[in-house]
Structures are given as structure tokens and as C-alpha cells.
Length: 156
Image (cartoon, rainbow, N blue to C red; front, side):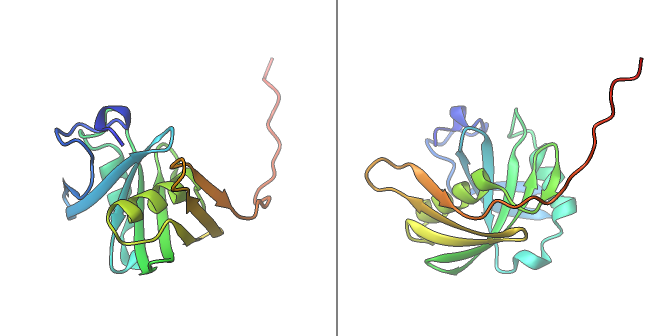
């Protein structure tokens, strides 16, 4: 949760409720690292977020020297959220396990959710639990093949 470890360029001890200015408005974000950087923004209507516009703006914002994964989440209850993800370098994704874990932690840090939540992502649902014993986040959910393809052999 230390800004230098995420990394995010802020002076605070933790990046909770930090304003970030974009051409589309100012958002309050909570930043966490799950081994990779995440910015979580809680909104009233996740479906209406123009993710393809705002995602790249935040991903490449000067506050993030290594860029960042961006998640917009709506809290349905203290045990349930719906979320969408803009993954750095990839764009909008159907599911992101580290992102769902980051939303779980950010929800707790902002007193919006409990330690155990159900996250609804476009690709399916994930159950998350942040242990009070060790602060590890545990995730349960399906793994499904969504794409197959052939990689061409290197041209000679």
C-alpha cells in the first residue's frame, strides 16, 4: 500500500481517495499493488463509464511512472460489487484476478465492503476474501477457455 511500492507519485502515506484529474473530470482513486499497480475508482454506474476514453488517460497519467491497471467499480452491497477493467497495455478485459483483488482491498480501505465479496466482471464472477490473519487475498472462480489460435512459425 506504500505509494513508492505501487508505484504512484503522491506524498501521502497511502493512496486512499486520491483525486486524479483527467479531461473527463476528476475522480477519487485508491491505489494498491497486487504485484502490479492498480487504481480503483468507485462510481455510481459502472456501465456508463466511457472506459475506452478514461482508461488510457489514467493508465498513462504522470502519477504512474510504470502505468497502471484501472478499475471502475460500483458497490451493490457490502458483500457485492460490479466492476470493469482497463488493463495496462491491453485495454478493456473481460476479467482480471489481480484487479478484482485490488477492488476487494480498496473497498475495505474505503469502508465500502467487507473482507469477503462477490465481484461481477464481464467475464464472470469471482469470490474474494482478504484474510484478517495475514492480509492475503484469496480468489475463487472459474477458469474457462475463451480463445484459441495458431502462432505462425518464424519466417525464414
